[in-house]
Structures are given as C-alpha cells and as structure tokens.
Image (cartoon, rainbow, N blue to C red):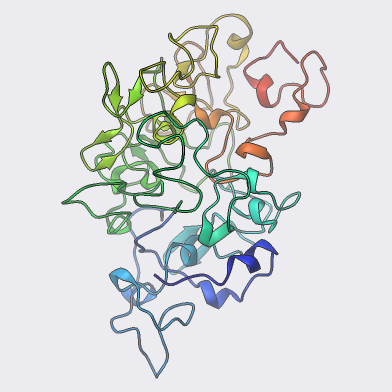
Length: 386
C-alpha cells in the first residue's frame, strides 16, 4: 500500500502538498464511504501498470504498486489534511476524517489527536492509527476489553496494529476466514446508502461497519440538525456478549467479527466489551441485570420514560439516541421508553477535542450548577441534575 509521509510531520501539523494525497475511492483499507456506489472514470482511482511517462502513478509518487491497482490508500482518500470536511472528485464526494476545517463530520476528526486542529495535540482524544496519528502514548490494549483470548490486554487488537479497516480495524470484513476478502475490497462499487437494515456485507452495512444497521445522512452530517442526521440502531436492553460461552451471544459470525444483533453499541463491544454487555463468564459488564444500579453506564438500553429522562423529547446532536427499528429517514423527535442510549450518545467514533472522544467537556458537567453547561452534555438526558 502507498504510505503517507512520516507521522512526525502529521503530529507537528506540517502538511505535505495536497498532490501527495490526491484521492482514490477504492482501497483495501478505507475509513469512509462515498454517497452511493462510486461513479466516474476508472483512472481517477486505478492505474494498470503504475507507470506513465517514466513516472509512478501513485499519488505519493511511490514506485511500489498498490493492491487492487489503486493509485493510493485510504489516507489518500479520506485524510488529506485540507480545510474542508469533504473533497470532490468528479461525480463523487469523499468525506474527510482528518482536516483543519471548522466543521467535522459525524465520526469526528483525527486532526484533534495530531494538533492539526483543536486545543492541542493529545493521544487521549481518539483512536490512534499508527500510520496516521503516530504511536499512542496513553493506551495499548482497548479499554474495557473482556477477559478472553487477550481481548483486554491488547493481544489481538492494540494501538500498535490498529488500522482503519480489516482484521485490526473497524471498517469492512474483520477476521473473515476463507471465502471473504479482508477489509473493504469491492465495497465502494457495491455501496448501498440511506436505510441499511440488512448489513449482510460491508457494502450493505452502516458506513462499511460490517453487520451494523442504521440510516446514513446523505452528507455525513456536514450540516446536521435535529431533523437531519444519521440514525442508529439499538436494543431496549443489553445482552451478554462474548466469544460464545454459556449464555453469551458470540461476536464471531458469518463473514467475521461483527455485532450479533446489528447495533452500534454491540459493534463497539467487539473491542470494548465491559462497557456494553451484561455480566457473563468473561466480563462483569455494566452489571448483572439491565436495571439500576449499574456499575458502568449502560448502552443498548431504553431511555427511561419517567422522571428526568422523560423531558428528552427533541433529538439533540449533543447526545444522539438509537432507534429499535431502522428508520427510512431522520427524525427530530425522541420517545423515552422506546428510543435507546448507545455508546455514540456520549462519544464520537474517530476523535474529538475532548479526552476519551467525548462529545463535550466532561469537566464542565457540574451537578446543581445551572451554569453555561445547563441542558448540554450529560444534562441532555439527566435533565434535572444541572
């Protein structure tokens, strides 16, 4: 695969010319998706021989060819480091997960880790992908990993081998076994957008997250509002997750590692199981049962329909909720009792300007203060505590 320049330059915010990252749309490892199946001329993304007029055809000038005859890798598509959250390439639009612009897309921005934007570089602001953001100086194994087969120690996926996609990443097939390609190979050509309630392949899954169901905003939430946003799938109560032990639902299915019920929180649980599962033989999870008192904040749990929670009725981008049925369009209303708390209610997927990828500054969440943070962050759901 073609490589970006050294991570030290990204860390210091010194960006190389845009020509070094000019885009491809098909890559064995990609962290975003084009709107619908890709269109346009083949040579925008592919090269037959990686040679033209005595020059390499890769976007970074590397003489080494790439898999699938592509002219670059996923960083060249989706992490160009420019000033815009999207980049046009002919008839296609490419979402950017690393840029310096004011508006971030739904997944967040790896630029907060490197200092490309935000309040300063910090490893604890997001998922560290070595080739993109450098070595993680804070973590090695995944926080909340379950006690089985090295999931809690980093014996499988860790901050040294984390990638955008494939077995050690998030997008595409992960540990698929024979008969399935690793990563997102071919998914861009077959991409389905909008309502995704099947999730049988990466192309049919929410943002190429294998097995995840949901509704994709047509602009990746470049212009989000209470009525225009992604929609996520969730359960009314969490289940026991693991590798198939007694009473556990296994995260290993046809086509590799994936959420057994298709929810976003279960997808996160494939690495961070303790934060999302009920107590099992391999995890103490959020507690033994799906009711208070919890030992960790629950996810895949219905927002209670009584007390302080009943006041959350208008969709908030500060604390998104999930639906128990995959909708065909975004909705602006929230229904306590049937809409669901999930991992992305508090966190973003890639990186934010706050520690632990939080959507807000946790240090300003002061109970009984009724200050500037009122009705924001934690208090979107816990409406009487500010």
